[in-house]
Image (cartoon, rainbow, N blue to C red; front, side, top):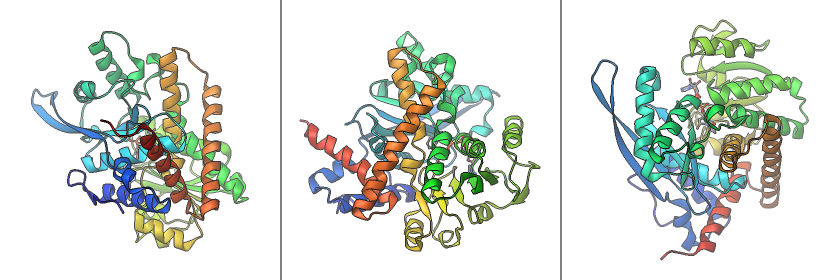
Length: 424
Ligand code: NAD
């Protein structure tokens, strides 16, 4: 067992959850004591205060973080979250998961994550721009195209990445596209990045449906969260012919046994920003969505939404973890013991986002750009390889799929650290 039990700096439910997952995986592969804490603990973090001028002339100071978990295997990589419940512990847990994810799918990156405690919906566009720029300004000494490369996460998007590229580029005196990924195509963004995470989730779901011999066209899908990941997952599964019977966001959830018209829902959200008052289904609660009978349940919003109370009530055949950390450790155990649900764990399920972020970064460094088909073909090839290696590990050691994925990711990070030795 690791000697350090929990850090007071990062202590929180979600960080404990990530640590417990690490400990279980480290035990399962007998990770040597000498390398455990080095592999587990975030390398470094930055906390910043962000004063911005409001439209009414007043000043508000926001708080933000960046945690770099691992820099041993390349620059660290991870999104920036703008959400009122961000904590440094949550950011650290997300950074840890990024490390295992990048390692699992074979990217030359460590893991990082950033966050600002803010509800972006409460800011005007100008205020959001000032906050995004100020946050990037504070990150400048801490990040770089070969040090740490941010990307969008909950509450941030292409537009915000564009402002961040501009802020960083003004500092260095030339356009530095490779400083963030998930940016607009006009600034060096990649074809296919916007839909990459959802496209990857949907692709893996079709592969697991095939393993279960369930035709995609017979599959029903419920999705929690209708932002970047949830809506793109819905669009891709709809395109494959699955029937999306329930969708939700933080304002409302809707169910239609006949299938939700996803094009209409996308259009609705484009104009109204949220699903509230959408007339394409019957309104239900989020809990009803999570526990409804369906072939595929895809939580694509916050972490820790599948609780020990909900786990026995799930009625899906596949739990596709499009969000990071949606299932608590206790709930995970209940689901494992039930044995009737195939879990596609987050580090595999939503890895399409960082894979195409990696492609974007490569294109920026080479100044050589690829077409959408090339991007998606390469994405699917990596996902196929990652799925095969997880399934092999699972069968070989009789692990759960999550344990298989985590042990692969963690072992590779530990091996890199071991190979580098300890400096000084
Ligand atoms: P987003 O901000 O684009 O969308 C988040 C969605 O979740 C919104 O529709 C919001 O209304 C909804 N939501 C928030 N709270 C909710 C609640 N309590 N109940 C129901 N819905 C709620 O964020 P995103 O980029 O789509 O990220 C979603 C998840 O996917 C996060 O866990 C994120 O870490 C993970 N993820 C994102 C990416 C990416 O490329 N954006 C990549 C990998 C993983």
